[in-house]
Every structure is written in structure tokens, then in C-alpha cells.
Length: 121
Image (cartoon, rainbow, N blue to C red):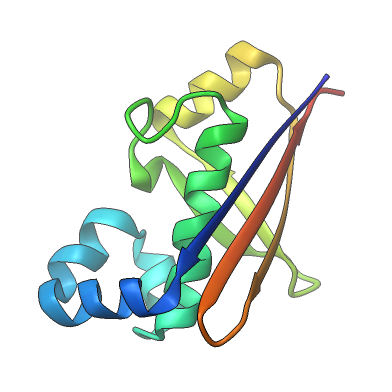
């Protein structure tokens, strides 16, 4: 069985929220590793925001089912993005029998998009 999730977000929207709320926004949504990697670059933050939403959709929870920080966008040795689950997101994946999550991220000047495939082995 395969679950999918996709999300797209406007980069200027993330930039506006970052300018208005700063570290309060960053610390609510992103892990310390994500904050360090993105260095407040709006396109990178937007791609990770979209990745978290796409992962929530693949897990069938929506934004109310798991914490934002229960999903972390990581970098694999190859440089490709990966997903690490914690807490309720990890428990939800276990309940669904999900053993692997693949992700693709992209952004233009205006939009960031993420596509997630969650599969069982």
C-alpha cells in the first residue's frame, strides 16, 4: 500500500510570517536542525513547511493530528532530502505499517512544493 501527499505554498507568505514573528514562528514549526540548515532563507523554509504538510497528508492526519516538529526534513548523505518522524507522527506511521517515506522538494521564485510517498514494505 502507498500513501501520498502533496503541498504547495507561496514563498512570500512564509517570508511575511518570518518577518512578522521571527524566531517565534521558526521555533513553533521547525526543528533546530531545520532552522540551522535554512538560515532564515524563505525558499528553504517554505519547502520544508510544504514537506511537513505533505507528510501530514500522507499520514492521513492533517495539521491537527501531529505536531509540526514531529516531522523533520533531513539531508541524506547523497544530499537528497529525507523525512524523520518523531512522536505522534512516528506512531501514526507505525499504525499504518509505513516503513519508508520518500520526498521530493522544489521551489521557484514564488512557490515551494513538496511531494511525499509513504509506503509499506
